[in-house]
Image (cartoon, rainbow, N blue to C red):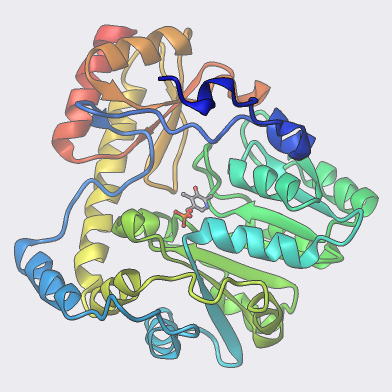
Length: 362
Ligand SMILES: *Cc1c(COP(=O)(O)O)cnc(C)c1O
């Protein structure tokens, strides 16, 4: 009151990039009080004894110190855990989102193009645009399989610096044809990133191919395995690539609490693997239950979510929400996804609650 701020000029945003101002922020809907099945999170927490051990470990972390800029010990432990092929290296990111940015930034020469089958993970497009690359999404076929000819034509036409392939794809949930991806790897003039965010549920990987394919990068994350909150992704590739990407990495990008948590959890991967196995079993049960519902077309999934189509996606989404269930409405993301909703596989109780609410909302 009576302060100068009353007369202060409004911020002149015209100094900002036009594309930044024209973009809306990545929207994360509030989930308070709802059964949260919108973000592919593992529904289980840590067992009590492990949570306690983690508490004790974190209590000893030196919060006054910067993290190691190059956490070699954790990287070596992770490399052993995943059986990283000899001669390959890995780098850690603040989620795989950060690594997607770093790869694109490293390739963002003037005119550089990023290609991905589409629809797929929105961060590929967003990162490409913000990092100064042109993004070209190549439409999938109606059954969400790769359009081989369209992909090869786009590669020949655009000469992409980077191709992203989500394995399995988000939001459709399917694994693409391996032989077609191999053809893409053969044809690509630049890098091909196989994004294995859903590895715990697909149980299928390109990692052993790294040694044979110098243009292949394998991207992974601990997020879907049950540690989305710690934000830790990793990129595996020939050491020559990693050395270059590492120059763009902010020196302390992975914080000490994340490093300590990951270090402990790598000794207890059996706990997370068992949870993933439960989720895979629930996925099968949920898929069968969805397919038994008239008016619902549910698609095969190699991930911890299921895409399904209904006659009126907006109405069903709203009906579920009014009944306390939050899933993701992807119906307006892309014409191929018309009528489609995506639900994360939750606990048995959550899935039952979802199914009951769905029946009441159809
Ligand atoms: C969820 C997801 C990720 C994970 O990103 P983080 O930043 O590691 O949490 C990466 N790629 C795809 C395709 C995803 O669906």
